[in-house]
Image (cartoon, rainbow, N blue to C red; front, side, top):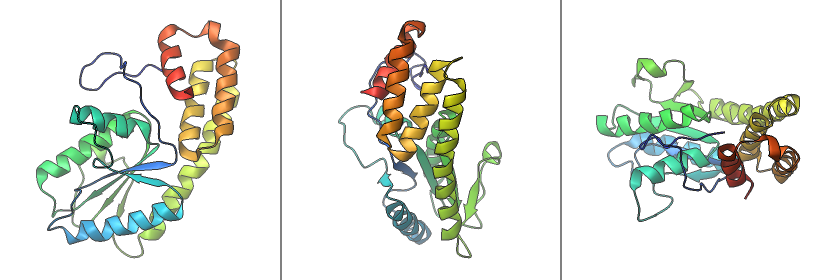
Length: 214
């Protein structure tokens, strides 16, 4: 559970405030001159509210500090990421969206791309699941969100199976399950495991585990 700062290349030292049951939405914030983006964003917002998932984007917090560091912390703190793209978006904006999506994928977040039918995705992301915004696509978004909920149970099972052999990785799986569900029971179990096996865990891993357990 060692996290590297993506811009500095060093081990991250700043604390991250985790936001369980949240989704980082990656798209053009204003949706200006992009009616498709506005329409899709409304559908996503409605479904996130239905699933009691907090919607977060780059404008959700004002830190007054480094903008890219803020984006990194937001992507790292959320369990889910949804990217919304269209050919109406400027290429620079699409580039930023895929950069943020790449950050989330690299940290094992649950991600989804929603795109207009005529919009292509880069070849490097062809394995990333995507939905075309057509033909009752909201049902597919609901299916994705339900599958994410099921994945939290899977992460708990993995944690139970490996906690004796690898407590650090087990706690990390518990962290992923907790971020999806917000269930404090999972966090309490992680805390108990950490206390029981603390002497076996190196100092760098202890730092990130404590960051999660705060």
